[in-house]
Amino acid sequence: MTPIRVLFQITIALLFSSSVVSAAEFKPLAGQTAVKVCADAHNLPYSNDKLEGFDNKIAAIIGEELGIPVEYYWFPQRIGFGRNTIKKVDPETGKFLCDVAMSIPAERGMYSPTTAYFSSIDAMVYRKGEGYELNEISDIAKVSKEGKKLKVGLFDRAIATNTLLKHGLADQIEYFQMMTGDAKVNSGRIISEALASGQIDVAFAWGPIAGYYASVSDVPMTVVPLNEIGSDYIFSFGMGVRHQDKAWQALLNKILDKRKDDVAAIVAQYNMPSLADVKQVVKKKRTVYTIENGKVDDKTYDGWRVFNTTCFVCHGKDAKGTERGANLVEAVTDMSEFRFRKKVLKKYFAKVNLDDPERRLAFLSQIAEEHAKGFEMPTWSDEPSVRAHISAIYAYLKARSDGALGEEKPERLAK
Image (cartoon, rainbow, N blue to C red; front, top):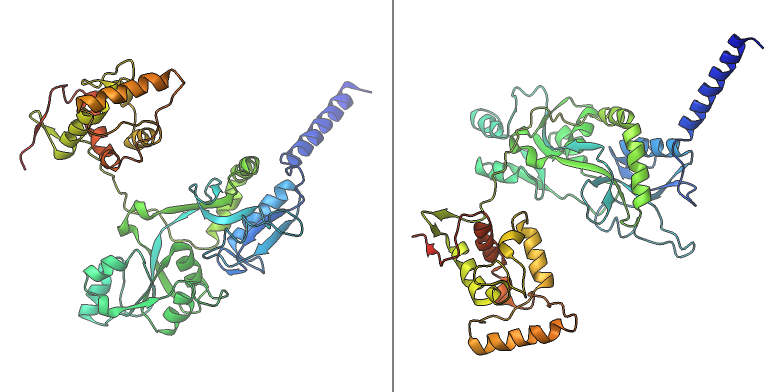
């Protein structure tokens, strides 16, 4: 055999082995014979029982990568969805009815979320060719004042409601119920029926609903993303799994990462409103305490007061610790108020009014006795007079930790 032929065969073998590895890059979990999806059979653009939604197509990618079929358990995606699908066990088989829910908020709640595969914002939709142009919510008021009085349709608790009311449009609003008694009817009806028929002139809806139903309508429509409400109202969605299914979550994330371009192409087919020009909201850093010329705000002063009638017993008058308690000035250096509150309420305890000598001595005696038994101090959560001031105590200690306040009693700022 010539060297060239040997080299050719080696190359072919490597290419073949590479393709085999690629095809078998992802394997189903032990015992997994299908991708069992929880979904709504009448919920376009997300899903339907004809598999026309973008969630149906993304689920198909998961099945393709794992080499197993996709099976659906259908249930209306509304109140009770999770409880009746991904959390519910089939009494006959003893297994969960389904293992992954689509288009779930990309934040931990009832589900553990995967990587988000789409983000969107609410949108305004109106018919084309009516002789006016709407770019912001305020334009509805302008057109109504100068020409046609526009009828506005929106769902209860819609994000645009307050802005519409501020522009004096209360008497032009027709409110729609988000969930009707018919599970086959979804929120797209505000566009496909009410707006298309002329019942209303402007509709407000969640971005995927607005973009999809406007694009498939026989009546030409314009979709305007609500850029003006800001980036705080952009929400992201992915798949949701049960909290205990960490290996399944990790596997889904790997597949979504590998096929992210395909997933993005699928989502793009459904005409979601553009997020290119959404107003970016700059969040102001929350002020923990206020100190001016050595004087403090009421909350910080209250924190000093409560600390020096309660916490000082174990942590010292200077808050720098004793043999019974930690140095809190150092402890809060990199500690958020949330962590401080959680730690204090779930670990530490002290009776109030410990500036009373007899009570203080009795308490210290109790601690000394209990520490010898491996005692861990109970919670403050049962002491409402202390619990209500956790934020104030944190403000005082943070001011101390930042070097903005000394050990001495502070003065209050004049009101």
